[in-house]
Length: 391
Image 1: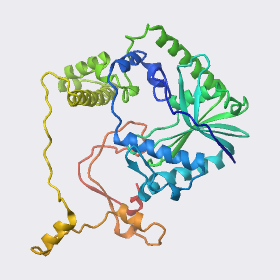
Image 2: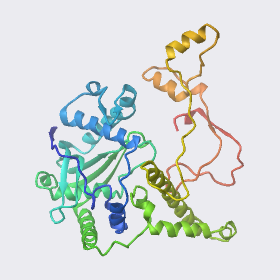
Image 3: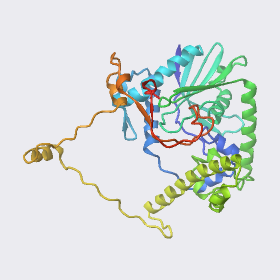
């Protein structure tokens, strides 16, 4: 298999890029809102993800080994042996499976791609690859919380459409090849997912994207708002009038009114509540950020969190405490998950001494692959058989 690397700045368009494509297409007004809103600071999770992307680029792009990358540091995050076991090695294992499954013979990493008719629509692909039958667009995702699926993913379609129009890589997109859109997210139960589309389906996406870009550039969409799942990462959400309207609707919906609703109405209300609660967190974060920058927020102020005491020097503290106390260390039994990790590769069977306990329920979307709890739940703990210890 041939590997080449396209080095680029890794920049992404503020008008429309992979991560904003769905938001711009579904909610044109989001563009101006995000321009007006202060730039959100990067989170520690995003910075760790950037570091892990950097590791994958150096392994696939520069031929480094995992062992050579241990200790690599970026944005204050370091690749440790544990993190390599959790994220990097599983991601590489997924990559090997994908290469074999789709007959990949050549790949590129960190490729800058853009649309010919819309130079302000551009981004950087993690991996572009192809073989005799398929063209592959792959994204690494290192989040542990929200699963990102390939099916119907606008980000992958955005990159594939742009790559097909980019001089250096458009030859990968031969008309007879289906396009494999792939997400690798090692922390999920299903670590890689794919969506295979043909050129006609990609053509349809590119056409709709082009219409959305023209609308954005015309300035006629500045007040066209539409809420949905795409609001989750919108930097302009705290300023959004649509979200304020949704919040008002929820405030006006009493428990008595909910008791008269049909199941589909309750379902719609739950979706609205989920989206609005996320918006509320964004508002609180926005206001907190304004205060930390020294700006005024009427009715609010900053106070110091409760301080926690720590040992100035742990060795010195241990030496002193041993002179007066017999027991200065807490001993805690490791969890089954920690034990399995430490025993990895051994033949020790823990199934007879491990049991999973269900102590309640949680509500999720109907499409969640986990089996539904049917009937009335009485709230009692339910011990599950050892065969379920990994679930």
